[in-house]
Image 1 (cartoon, rainbow, N blue to C red):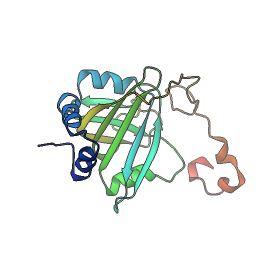
Image 2: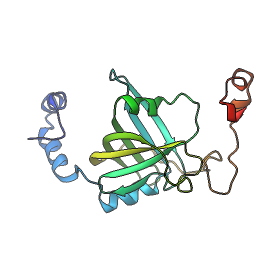
Image 3: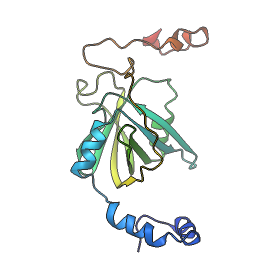
Image 4: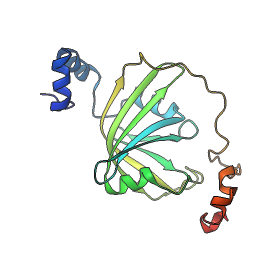
Length: 193
């Protein structure tokens, strides 16, 4: 009995004769806790993709970036990451507030490795602002499942430069240019005008 696959998955697995392979992959790669290797991989990443859905199940996917370690594994069942200043739309966080289910995709483009993590998220106030400079709040994820993905189609990329907009202790974070455009200046939050 699979804990990972539903009828939609199984229909396609039967159609393409991959049930045995899918079952073996679930058996040897799928787990419900973050391992030490998973922790190391996650905490070395400087970006990931976050999938959320609104209360009606309409999906949204966003890029989340920071310095390596901006996603922190608290224990084998929990991780947190900061919500930094963005465009004020709060699409991901707003979805989390009405639908806790999230998917996270971590990719190492240089080594050709990726890891999926699915779980339930909540918004959390920051206890120690020094841990996450300039973060507005944290998103805490309770892990449901973790598993690697086939790296075959990962394109090779190299980091050229980390974003100067990532908040860092002791460094003033510059405002993005778009916040000075005429269409934006008069509607920025009070503390940014």
